[in-house]
Every structure is written in structure tokens, then in C-alpha cells.
Figure 1 (cartoon, rainbow, N blue to C red):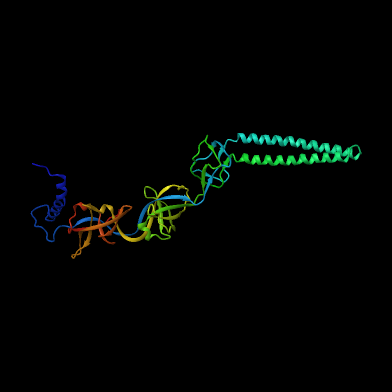
Figure 2: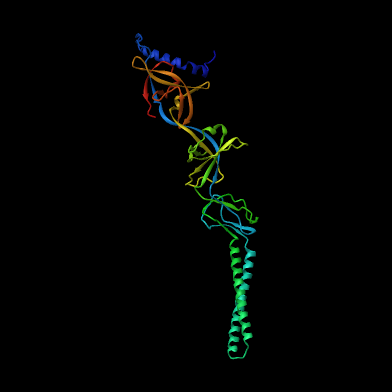
Length: 371
């Protein structure tokens, strides 16, 4: 004799349960006749379908770009000996970022300073010589021509000293360029160079982005372009769907990208917690519209053959309730609920427990679920 399969049991379970209800109404002791009025009503837990605001949204991959980015490039050539920062680090204006080997420039500065010191001695000697000859000229010992020559020597020495002073200052300024500093406060971007790299004045060392100046670049398919408009809500969400930032469309391109058949839209991103970065890829959710829809608990909905069903407790003509199986058209999931597009309306009493034992039309006693 073959055993009853699980599938067969699931098929006959509602029938057996209904038979049990019919049997229980006739009494379990003695041979009392069955009571009139049909099967006993079955207690069921229900949740009243509630209205909720539901967003019509579409997700796109967006790129974050800073509206205020300082590109850091060296003002001198040389070998990088130190890197003081890393990508994503917050820096103040003037903070050191990198060190370029200054040895050669330090030698140049030292040479200029030595020449300056020697010239200072030359000026001092010329001044002393002029004072000596001036005294002799007053005594009539030397000619006026010798005095004039001594004065010219002083002037020439002082002029040379001034020239050397300017050269020293210039070389000292040049020496400062060997330490690369942040031109503004902000967040350090990618650092493509490494210690030991030789850099030119055209080499990009890194970028510094001002916080709170990001824009989301969203490329929307041309099929949706008719729905695009300024101030449409945009949400930036992570992989779990958590909203990281909320914004609105601030720019809609008047042109279509011929290669991708998309329209560029931009949304300024508030970034007070510095959780977002320049050049970051992120999911952008464009909210096209917001409507009122009914929502029902997921546990109340069954799916059979690609269709969705739920049981609703409806009042009958005798003042009681019976269950009716409803075919649903469901939308997105919001929390623990389905958004119902058709089949159930707000206020309907949706059965949330024991649905596997229910048959369309049987009497029930609805009890509002507290969970």
C-alpha cells in the first residue's frame, strides 16, 4: 500500500480541517444531532490594510564629482622622498603633502648665502676704506679723484650685496617649493605617485576636494527624458538600500549623449558627514512621483503559479464574517509589507494567520492582530 505523499497531504489538509469543523459542530459525546446553521466560525488574526505613501522610483548608477577640486602639481622637478598623507585624509590649508628631495637646492641656497656673507665683508671693507680716504682728503693728503673712487667702490659693493640678497631670497623661496603643501582645506583624493618617483612640474600629485561640494552625475535613458524636470527628488543609497543622502535635480542636459542614448542630470549632494567621496560610484534613486497605496503584510500573501493571493474577512448578510480569496497585483516591498496595486483596498481585513487552512467562503471570527 503506497503512503500518502506530502503534496497529497497539503492538497487534502483544508478539506480534512473543514471536515473536522463540521464534526465538532455535531458534538463530540453521545449521538446528538448536528446543530443547524452550518460550520462553526473559525477565529483568525487579521490586519487592516493601511494606506501608505509609495514612491515610483528608478535606480541608476551615478558618479560623484566635486565642484571644487584643487589639482596639486609640483612647482619644481625632483625625486619624491616622503608622502605625508593618504587618500581620503582631511587636511588643512598649508598642510604638508609630500617632500621632493631638496639636497641640490639646499646646496644652491648655501652657496648663495656664502657669497652674500663674503659680499657683506667686502661692503664693510669698502666703507672703512672710504672713511679713511675721506679723512686724508680733508687733510689734503689725497686727491678728490681718489675720494670719488673710494665712494664708487662702496656703492658698487652695496649694489652687489643687494643683488646677492635678492638671489638668496629667490633660492630660499625655491627651496620651499620642495615641500608640497595643500593649497586649500579639504579631502585628499587619489595619490598616484610613490616615494622614489621622479616628478615634473606637469605631474599631478593628488587632488584636494572641498567637503560638501559634491554633485551626482546621473545618466538617464532617453526613454525617460520626458519625465525629467528640475527639483525631482534624488536619493543616494548604499547596497542595502539605506539612504545616504537626499537631494533634488539641479540640472538637466538639453542634449542626448549620442553614444549611450542617455541624458545627463545633476544633483548637488549634501555631504556633512564626509561619507561620500569624489569619483565614487553610487546608486542614485530618482523619485518620479509619490502616490497613496494600500499595504499588507508579506506573511498574508501567498504566491501560486506566478499569481499572488490573500484572504480577506468580509461581512456577510447574517452579521458575521466569511473569508474571500482575492487575487492581488503587488508592487514593491516596503519594510515587511507588500504594496498592493489592485485586489485589496484600504480598510480591508486581511487574514495573516492560518491561511493554509482557509477555503473561500467559510465563516470566520476576525481578531485584529497586535503584531
